[in-house]
Image: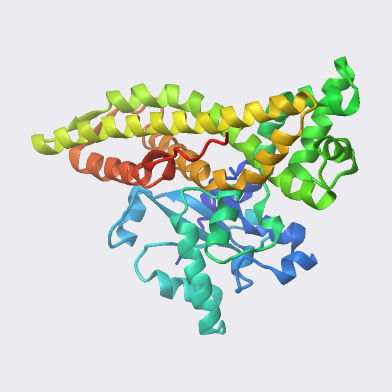
Length: 382
C-alpha cells in the first residue's frame, strides 16, 4: 500500500475540499467532519467499518508508473485514500486501488485486523458497487445504492462545495421566473432574492426562506424535502449538460484527429470504427438527455404560469431519471476528462494502436452499457 508522497500527495489531498468535483470525488472525510456526530449519520453510516467512513474515494486515471500494480490494468479505477487525519488533509495519507494485485489483502490491512469478517465482506461488496459507477454524482449514487439495498444518511448525497460554487449563477437564472410568482419581487430585488434562494435550495432545503416556493408547489414539508432533492438533481444535470456541450465541442475534433500508428492495419481499422461508434453514442446521449430536460422545461414553464401540478408530478417521477442520466453524463464526463488528461493542449495527438485499442474499447464498453444508449424511449414524461 503506497504512502502518499511528501509533496504531491499532500497537495492533492488538501486541494480536494476546495476543488473536488462531486462526480469524481466521494469526500467521506468531509462528510464525517460535518455530520459524524449527527443522529442520522450514526444510525445509517455508508460503511459498517468506521475507518472507511473517513476516507476519500476517487475515480482515478491510472498513471503509467502505476500500471505494474495491476495484473490487468485499465485506464481508470476507484482509489480509496485513508487520510492520516480526516480534518487535516494536508498531512497526506495511504491508498489502495480497486483491481490492484492483492487488493483484498491491502484493504484488510488498511482497515485493521480487528474488523469482523461479516463487516469486511459487506463493505467489500459495497466498494464493488461504487467501483461499477461511472461517477459519484449524488443523485445517481443514491438511486444505485437503493437498488443494492443500501439507504445511508442523506448527508452522503450532498453536492460538493466546489460544484455548488460553480452552479450558483446557473441556478439563480433558473429560479428567476419563480421569484415574481412566489415573492412578488422584481428588478434588483428579484436578482438578490433569486441568488439567496439558489444558495438555500442547493444547501438547505429546510430553510424558512424556501417556504413560499413550497407553498407555490402546494407540497407538505416532508414532500418538499424529497421534491427539493429531486429538483436539485434536475438542476445539477441541466448544469452538467451545459458543461458537457462546451467540453464536447473541444473534445470531438481532437478525438477524431488523433493519429493511430502501428503496423497492424486490421487493428487500425478497428480503432477507426470504434472512434466513429463512440462519437455516435455520445451524440445519442446528448439527444436523449435533452429529451428529459425538455420535459422538465415544459413542466417548469407551467409552474411559472401558476399551474404547479405538472411540475409537482415531474418532481415525484424525477428520481427514475437519475440512473440513466447519471450513468450517461458520468460516462461522457469520464471520457472527456480522461482524454484531456492523456492529451494536454500541447501534447501531440498520437496513439500507438495497442494503447488506442485498450482505451477505445473501454470507452465503447462504458457507453454501450448505459440505458440512454441501449434504449431510453421511456424516459420522457407525457
